[in-house]
Image 1 (spheres, rainbow, N blue to C red):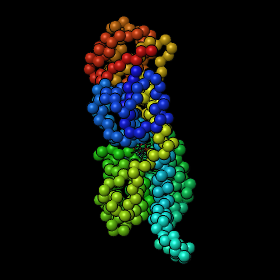
Image 2: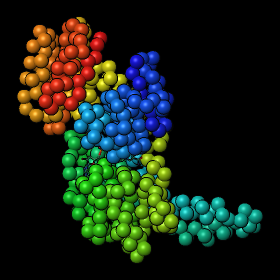
Image 3: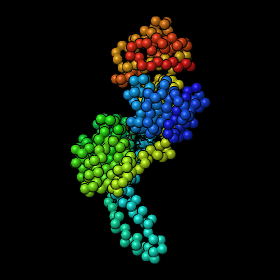
Image 4: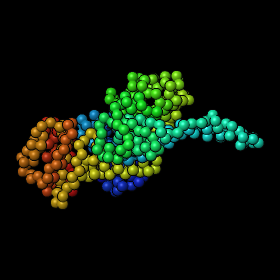
Length: 388
Ligand SMILES: NC(=O)c1ccc[n+]([C@@H]2O[C@H](COP(=O)([O-])OP(=O)(O)OC[C@H]3O[C@@H](n4cnc5c(N)ncnc54)[C@H](O)[C@@H]3O)[C@@H](O)[C@H]2O)c1
Ligand SMILES: O=C(O)CC[C@@H](O)C(=O)O
């Protein structure tokens, strides 16, 4: 029986995949794995934790470095909620440039008994005249799963799109419209009518990626942040809003100050809140956890190297060895098996510069003594055995 602690609301479609071998509850104290959305997870608070799966993209709510130090694998679900966010971003921008929410609120406030209602409507609408997206330039910062979709949607609306991506991923680039222009960050900021950011929040790296210095070049009207609060430096944005050089700030991360500002439209971290995205994320996260718990396979981890290699028929034990990524570990590990007279049927290894990950398959049942011996090796972080 494996135990899974859920934090936040996780779609039933995903939870239903766990099956009878799993106990799934939000009240388990020291679970084998955690399934989470936006709640904070300090992995040091859980003994014996094997893995954390984030049903979503951003993992800044999880203590990744602490997890790596203890051999805890952290997963996310790349792309599973990207369309939900991209659709919201384009909807919100479309509404902003047409003053759609303000206009609709004005209509709601009209006197329904006004005999000249139709006239009032026609004469009042000029206050809400807006502009069109077609022909305007959208600047996209970050061409990951969401940024690519936003860029493509903007192209379909006949916008010019310029984008910045420092680490282009071949799969994402393959999906990108060939009409999207790629440029450096300053060029994107300086040439956009609207700016949207889609990068992870990484303290000291993407923190204040849009900042006083580079935002000084922005001559457009709206900045959108549906990625994470700390990515945009707020003091210059507030000053630009107050001076009127920026028409609006549209974001998914409300603060008291933002809520009070009439030129800011805040959403309640709503980007991924569609039935489809919640299901996609939950299903992907549960599949990742099950494959890890049952077979030691790693896909979509943010701290472990990818290694998907299911054991062949006849394998009775799979020994999972997680080590710091230093030279000579494979030799040290195999020596332990040799010294015990255990024949290795299959050995898979991957490393990512920080973590070395090994799956050692054996056609007999190994006992706990091998775990003890492997665990004593210098630089080994964690060892577990999966029996079949
Ligand atoms: N509002 C929401 O509900 C919601 C939903 C999903 C994701 N998000 C946020 O959006 C972010 C992006 O999601 P995604 O699915 O596109 O992730 P992704 O990993 O597919 O894309 C992120 C992109 O940012 C790029 N990047 C990394 N560092 C960068 C830097 N210094 N400068 C510019 N680009 C950089 C990466 O190379 C990658 O292409 C997530 O990390 C998360 O914080 C928010
Ligand atoms: O789970 C959510 O609702 C938000 C998810 C989002 O912030 C993400 O990073 O994927």
